[in-house]
Length: 184
Image (cartoon, rainbow, N blue to C red; front, side, top):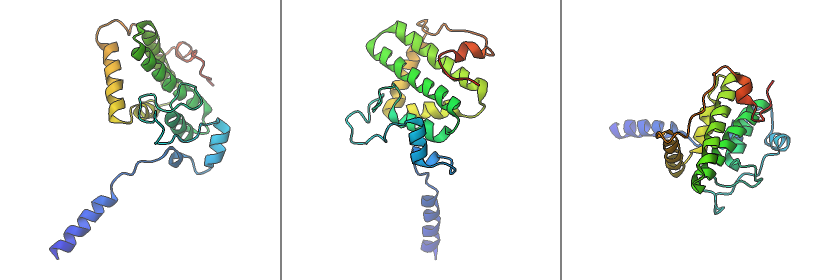
């Protein structure tokens, strides 16, 4: 009897394990995967055997400086809100460009990239009260190597090197959103 009870308890925990969702699983049931892919011109799902798949910036088949997996995540999760999609893709692109500048040792571009990340975050927060920024940042640093890399270059910016000197009133939507994000 004890063994059966133990087996049932252990099976209930196995059933509670959280499965990793694919971006396509996040879509509103009112829409189809093909419809969202076509409407947003999303890149194809990246192959895990691609040589760049596990690198920080990973696969960017359409060369828009947004990792394909992140672009698909944003598209499927936030469709049909094209404003949210544009701002969050802007955040992802700014993060990509910041990483490129960090790797190249270009502190001027790195500072501009940090400011663009900050502006995209605040622009999004002016319109939405959900976890969009946190969701996208978690997608950007979705592996242990990416988390370490993200922390390393963020710590450099915050370590008193003077790279973050951007300040502006928090309620100035025009200042934050003039990076080219469409706003209502």
